[in-house]
Image 1 (cartoon, rainbow, N blue to C red):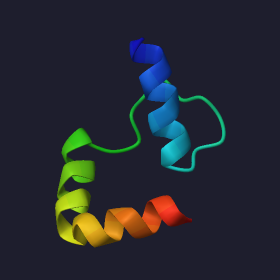
Image 2: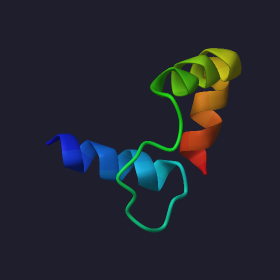
Image 3: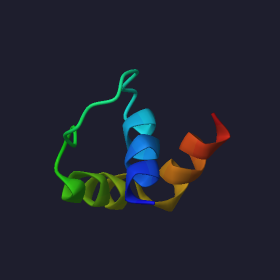
Image 4: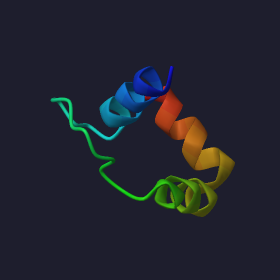
Length: 47
């Protein structure tokens, strides 16, 4: 399960090949989500 989640995370970040390390610190996504707010997240999902 952890590997599957990691693959989704890598795909979300735009990484095309598997990497055995995380491309950024996990808290960066939390900070990004808070910065763009609910409207920003909805715009991303509309793409």
